[in-house]
Length: 137
Ligand code: NI
Image (cartoon, rainbow, N blue to C red):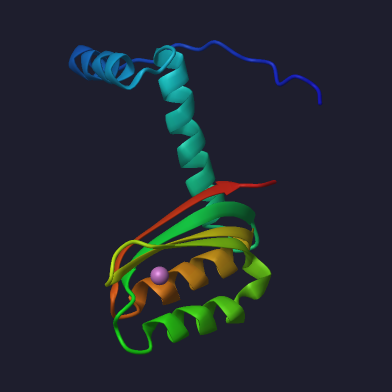
């Protein structure tokens, strides 16, 4: 893989904002201001690509749900089977008598990943869901 050359450029911003950034860099352990800003930029670029439905993405969907709710487990499984092409793997943890944690590893088109996440999130009994994606090409 050829190395991607880096470019330096000037950024103008309010001093107060720069101070807030420096505090974040310090507190969160970023290597530098540049490191912090690069990560922010990559996130924005990924978000933009995710809006393109044909974009290939990889990611995870974390779900916390009430396993004791009638039919929920069945509905979750049925929807995942509908999108089997996008579900690379899943991890299930029985958290307590009532609650389960499920982490899906997703790989596919942005459209499939988003539709799957939306359908699962909407089910009654799903208490928390978080989708995290990165562009894969
Ligand atoms: Ni369980």
